[in-house]
Length: 182
Image (cartoon, rainbow, N blue to C red; front, side):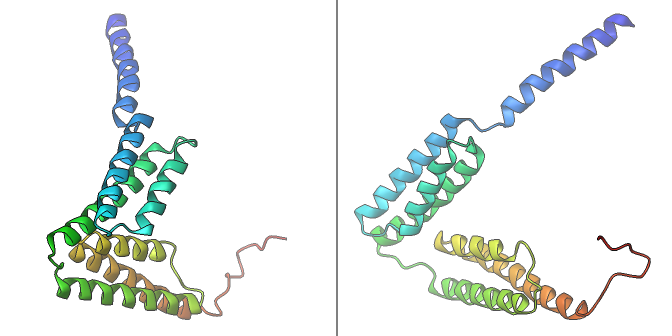
């Protein structure tokens, strides 16, 4: 019995050392992602399609390195790379992206922003709505119009629900049995 508990303990110790290493993003991975984003940005710039937004994203990713936020840096650099590659492909091929889908995405994003502002006007904006709209804009810039529309529609729904919730809770107070803090 003692040998069995010893082997189980050794197994757990080994797993605790291996698993975090498998999931953790290392500085070298973040640096590689940033380098790939820079290369895509330079390629897009070569056909005058580079965006100042993606340059800012690359700088933001680089700024995360000293604080060891490698996973976030990789995520931001990858988004910049995707946007610049899409811009390069569109500019160099002479093809225009699906104008109908792009227009629908733009409309969905505008509707989501309007719903967010309406909810905010009564103090009912939900925490994630603005970030969802920002992410939808990034997806649209990357040519992922269907995904952008879906996310913008979710954000618009959150805006509408936040507005309704704020109106329903207007004038609400805590029940008498809840102690007030001094």
